[in-house]
Image (tube, rainbow, N blue to C red; front, side, top):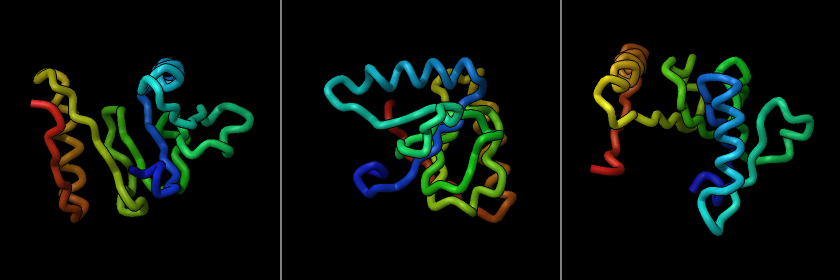
Length: 116
């Protein structure tokens, strides 16, 4: 939806390797629909509406999709922050900490269950 609304999106990854893997995946998925994207390290990255990179490369944008274990600093400066919570219980603890961090900042995080 963010792409259809011409919003800029930044996907935070946990490492350079994860950035490269997501970049490759986004060339192939979703099948039949290309998502214009670029790693922030690419020379022409500013042309793409979706940027992929580590937290250190986060710049002003409309929507942040956080795939790393650390909460987004100053999340209120973005229109929307999306946190993907892993299904496996042992991987969920970082998401619980991030949720509490956002609540402690005075935000009211909303949850949406995608798959049961």
